[in-house]
Image (cartoon, rainbow, N blue to C red; front, side, top):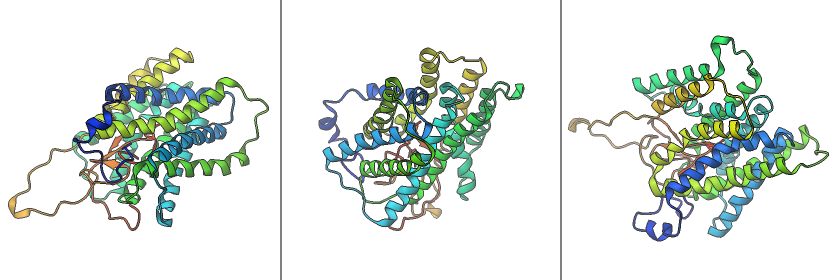
Length: 379
């Protein structure tokens, strides 16, 4: 996430020392961000022990919205204007927040939090696959194509395909993979529809999470009933999931991206499944077969390869053309990306260069950021 102080660009180098002199070192904030997003899967698991999945999702969105609303009030940010912007934000809220959060909550009814965290790491793979379909002018390199294949081999390793997926809850696993797929779809949608709005990233992010909260407020009473009793530990887990994992983590991401850039901030992606696995084993005593960590390493290696960029070659003098604004080039003030990086709903995500339409009145995540949304590549 990028700071909301300027809707068009991160702070200039000359202004950063004054704004960051009293902050913790960015490495500390980076580590805290990785821990929060890594532990989110544990919080989901604990929350579902006392609440229905939709209630867990509604709670995390509600507390996340509260944190972002306070941040907006402190910075005196205004809400976005225009029906078109709010329409796109509504779709983004569904794809990057309401849907994937709910899918992960339902998935963790039957699968361990460790597996959910690893499924979340497949988001860059889905993004790469979707870019081949949705972006006709995208030209993937051999390395990135190989990364896609390696990543899905890792998924099959995690799932134990050679054993016929023995002992695996297929429904829960499919739901977790669909949640990651939803993040990828949401990021592409955000990139194409919510750029150059002229509204601060914090305002867009807070509005999006708020809309997702309203969506769950409508859905939750239709499919759940009030719990007969409220247990303290699941309630605290939901509060932590929302206030930390959906609210505070987005603010942390804003600062890290602004201070060190999206490329370095994107590295948080590779720590999330490691922390999620360690938390599930250490705190929840979840069992871990050998193929789970081995497959996770393969998935992360494949995901890393899909995020590599082809080296830029200098165009011949006779073919000098006007630079295009694409996913691989910097665009001041765009939402959801910065220097080609989608940040957020569970983690940042680099997407390949491609032409981008200038938006009509409006300009992720996943849920995003340097920019805008949550989601929250986050979990």
